[in-house]
Amino acid sequence: MKVHLWGELGFYGPGRRGRFDVPIEGEQPLLDVLRQLGVPAADVAVCGINGAVVRLDGPVPTVRDDDRLDLFPASSGG
Image (cartoon, rainbow, N blue to C red):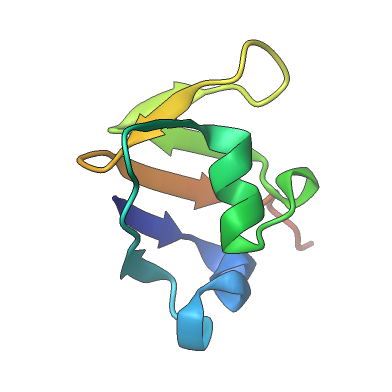
């Protein structure tokens, strides 16, 4: 699976990189994948799977190895 951690979430990527590949076997719940990556779900404001926005506070979406996962933090600034 292709993972893109945007903004400050890049801190959680391997070597603090925001773009990397992660092998996924079968279909896995997104929240399990976030735990495996070490990304706290509370730090994710917007999540996209293959370009479609998905919610983390409802039915848990699943991901597969051929998916692209985009995770965005909440915006901050003044």
